[in-house]
Image (cartoon, rainbow, N blue to C red; front, side, top):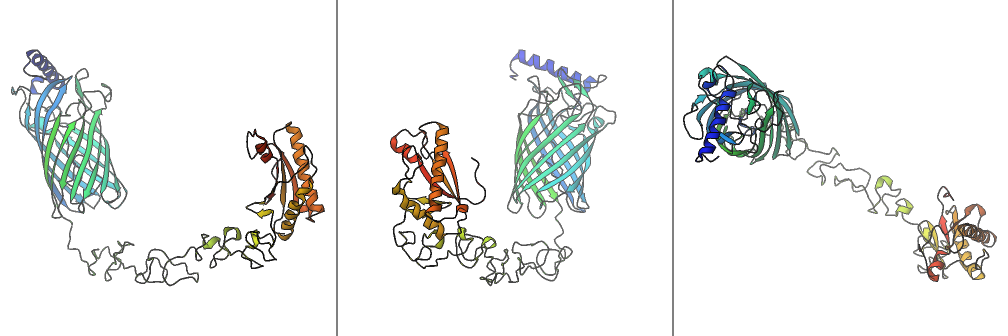
Length: 565
């Protein structure tokens, strides 16, 4: 707002007078604006964030205090008009830990300066604030856990109004004694050693003040959280936080503009080992709600009684005797169960001391293969098949042989499983035979190197295919482990589907009869099936050559069930 514009100035004073009248008691409107304007409430422990509270305890009988000073610019605007131009507030805070899970605290604010835009003296410039006191309880978790949960309950007394009937924006309620309350749920996530993420949500009970058309303050929902980055063994904290509140009254809507202050905050704390804490930071309002300033700066000095470092530690391993399961034997600090105070000379329990164990955290599998190095050997023979699935764990083999080496009865260098002549030595080029082969034993099928020829439009076999089928029969007889072969007939799309299905089945039957009659293959090892044009090698074939590729016979090994026709 431009204060040198008379029209704007007059309008601002009208709004200011309205706020005075609305938020002050009806019997004493001249006594000032009796709401607690400063929305920045420092966290209870010096080791918390700036505004973000954590579920941490403080240790039994450990005392602490904090002194804060914060300055805010334009913390109150109503409908765009500047009502309070500057506010400076100090806090004296005391706390003590009980039984490791409980923290009791008290906060006494004092407002050193509250100025209106024209510095006219309309507000009492300094005043005691409202006293806060309460307790925190940690339900679960420490800094060593991923998740922590706690809660805190705070009571507030209207000491601002009790101290001065002319207080302005320093506290809530009038001169009649009033006890308010504030309950908060506290969560914290520890993301590793360096990042903490506190989250809090609460409900605050306070006196009802104001007019919904301008500003109404009463019961409120509160919320906040942040990301705390801890560095240098937790001696430095970089913080990014946000906090806010909104109305929880039937008189006004939640999230209404004037009743919903929100601030974002950033700051830095130094927390040296000797107990003192120094912190500085700043924040800015991101909404126009009451108490959210254009900007704010703050500084703090805190002290927390250091933990007793004189606890007895007979073995000098850094774990106090009262927590040390082996108080006379130093922990070996090797990253394995280092918090119990006991040395772990054989982490993986495989009987090989860590000093001699190449894999101290992975137990040796004791299977008779390189059992002295302390490392498990899941694949002794290195054939890519784990020992638990390998029928020959110490001899490299193939998946087809369940991890065992391929046998080669005739010693010709061609494994029996793909040797067309497994009992007669041959050459690799001839699939283990001496003569040229027209059949190759492939994965799941017999691959033929020539076509099976029939007379056109017929199931009558041409003589030029006899040699090929004789080769197929010889391979089947040499490999009785091939229990069954499915002979498949395939056609092109020329003609009707029904015609081609019948023709393909007839051709498959012709091949089966040949293998049984001339090749002496057992009929029980053969099954014929026609697929017609349904499984083309070249879909949408148009040329003569492409259609010829689709007219074929295939030999597939059948493992269990026949496919449905």
